Image 1: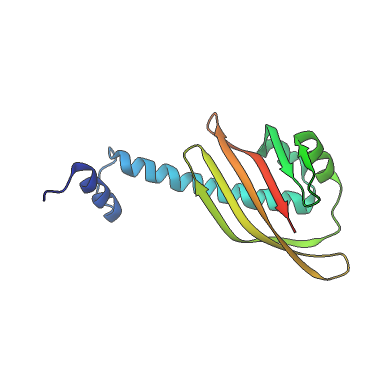
Image 2: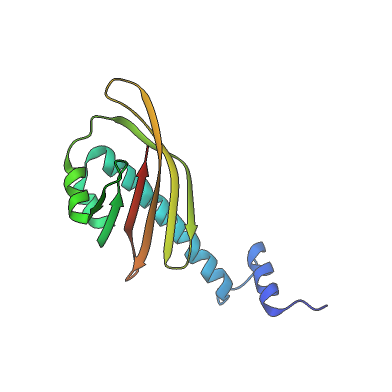
Length: 147
């Protein structure tokens, strides 16, 4: 059975032999760029929590951002920025097992996190952040944190 044009393009793209006109390769490259960008945004998000970096959050959060907190409260962008502006007593916040799922102009990031409590104990939890690409820029639209 002869190979379809699409399969030939995908096969050539997988081996790096297709030309720049190949739509499949352009989509694959765009997805790679998006994953790289979301990986960096995820690192910034975690660092901004640890460092109470409201300025960075103002750049990353969509105007209609919401967050589900570990205490089961749901807060909007303004309340999230207010609670995040307070210095945290925990140290060494780190994300682990980060999984980024792309769905067109929407992405979901699942991860575990660990940190050190003020009394030196190790603690952990999980988070899920949802991102939407709006006007060519990835913005966080939702976060859910559990401990």
